[in-house]
Image (cartoon, rainbow, N blue to C red; front, side):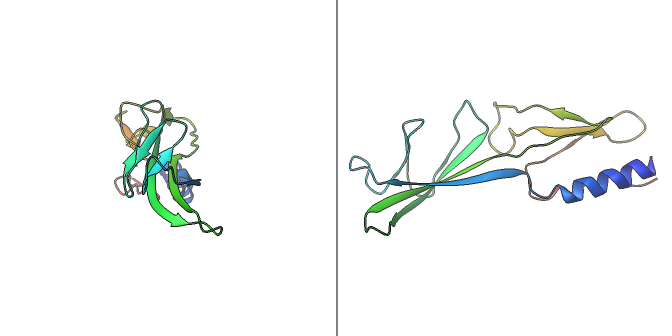
Length: 137
C-alpha cells in the first residue's frame, strides 16, 4: 500500500494543469456597446461577468473592451474548460456533472482512501491537487 500511495502522490503532483483556456476577440456589436457577445449561444455579457452554458462544462468570462490594431473596438472572451484525466485501478473516473458549475462539473478521480474500501474524490479542478490526508502507513 505504501508503494502505491507514493506512486499515486508522485503522479498527482505532476498533474499540475487541469484544464484548458482559450481567448476570443470579436468586433463590438453596435446593438451591445461595451459588452461581449458569445456568438455560439447568442449571449451578451457585461465586462467582468462569467457565464456557463447549461449544455457544457465550461465558463465564459467577458474580459472587456479594448482597441484592436486597426483602431476598432473589440471585446475579449476567456473560455475555461476541463482538462483530460485518466486513472489506473483501483481509481476510477467520475464523469462530468452538468448540474454543477465549472469547475465543479469537471470529471474527477475517485480512489480508495484506505483499506476499509472508503472512497476519496480527488478534485481535478484546482491547479494543484493536494492529497495531504493520504498517508503512507
